[in-house]
Amino acid sequence: MDEEVSSLDISSAFCSLAEIYLTDECYADEAEAKCHKYCHKALEYDATNPEAYLVMTNYLLSVDNKQVNYYKLHIQM
Image 1 (cartoon, helix red, strand yellow):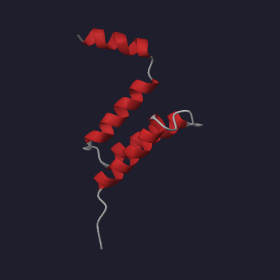
Image 2 (tube, one colour):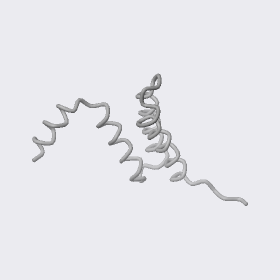
Image 3 (cartoon, one colour):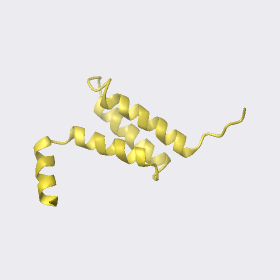
Image 4 (tube, one colour):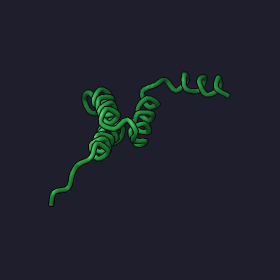
């Protein structure tokens, strides 16, 4: 079987790795840095993958100060 691996497949794999560091391995050494790296790799391999943008958004929300997000939301309204 000669199945070709697409850039979307690779991007989705990096999304999965990033999600591991957002959840199960969030307390691991350098989890934040690894998650950030995998989010960027996912976007690098396929900038049209909506899953990559969702994971990056989740990452940014998880590392950002909740109070800052509260104010950003209200400013946009």
